[in-house]
Amino acid sequence: MGKETLTITDNRTGKTYEVPVEHGAIRAIDLRQIRVSDDDFGLLSYDPAFMNTASCKSTITFIDGDKGILRYRGYPIEQLAERSTFLETAYLILHGELPTRPQLEDWIYHITHHTMIHENIKKFMDGFHYDAHPMGILAGTVGALSTFYPDAKNILDPANRQRQIYRLIAKMPTLAAFAYRHSLGMQYAYPDNDLSYGGNFLNMLFKATELKYKPDPVLEKALDVLFILHVDHEQNCSANAMRSVGSSHVDPYSAVAAATAALYGPLHGGANEAVLRMLREIGSKDKVGEFLKKVKAREALLMGFGHRVYKSYDPRAKVIRQTAEQVFTVTGRNPLLDIALELERIALEDDFFVNRRLYPNVDFYSGIIYQAMQFPVDIYPVLFAIGRTPGWLAQWQEMLTDSEQKICRPRQLYIGSAERDYVPIEKRK
Image 1 (cartoon, helix red, strand yellow):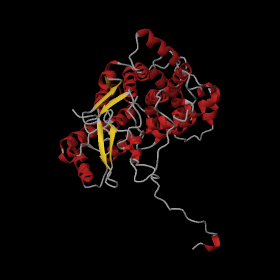
Image 2 (cartoon, rainbow, N blue to C red):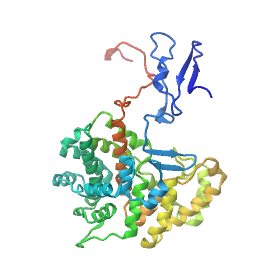
Image 3 (tube, rainbow, N blue to C red):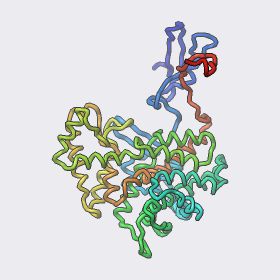
Image 4 (cartoon, rainbow, N blue to C red):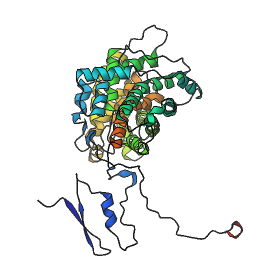
């Protein structure tokens, strides 16, 4: 067996270089030695959108897109969705191992007792216009928390980091629910620490005049599963934002605000809304075939199919599809589900889509469940942000404790003008 190296011959100079290969990758900095002259900066790799560049080593999430595998810390997502809870999964993501019973009880206690927010945060929220998007409010208010917890700047102290992690996981649902209630002009419903994580969030969203809100256990479990499915997903856009902003050693609230802003985009956290619009436009099950003909003719877009990483069926989509059936026993069957199932059936039998490896992704079914649970479309990315918060924090903490990581500062290929002299305005053509 040969050495774990790559031999590169530079045809410009005829020189040959041997570059080490580790974990199936070479270090981009090793290309710097490849030069055509002494004053040459050295060879760079050019990779728009990081299509084939690893920015870090990680032990958090493993994805095999060709085989449709997603694992958190080695545990298959299917097992966690079926047998775990969101808070237990959050512990796993952040600590690397499943908790013992005392560890889990301590973890849940600390998160449960950090759910309240400072009353001045409510005043801050009141400053937003009545029709402000809940995701915009969430991004603004989570960033503002850094001013309420100045100790958060001490990010290199593990005990202090842990305290901020408790606070962020606990307060994100409170901020999200308050943002939603603000958009409706409703008074805020405070956290109820007798309820589960998901149950308490439903309470803060939907409590009206009842003295004690009692969430439906089926919907409570479904929400927990949806949160689990969104906990982490490798170096996606918002996780990359969390690491990049966090690499400046800013406090975690500011970094989470940046990650939330990245998630706000329709290409990331807003994709399931586009699926709903598509299904509504199709209108009925018998029109699916006609719609797919338009897709193949490039006259329409097929939303919720395909993924940058997955080239087979997204394992999260399979879990959500099963969860949808349970939700509809409580809410009644969403008519959009029949359109979605027919769309999936025909697409997975059509060579046009199969050859292009276009399979349903997590966004294809999640919006249908959210709609059945009476969540308005504007809050869909907010739900995503709540579930993703432990993953963001795990990525941030791993980045801080990785001795190889420095402040993020990508290189560029400058292709602009060479040096030129300033021309006075009266002489310009």
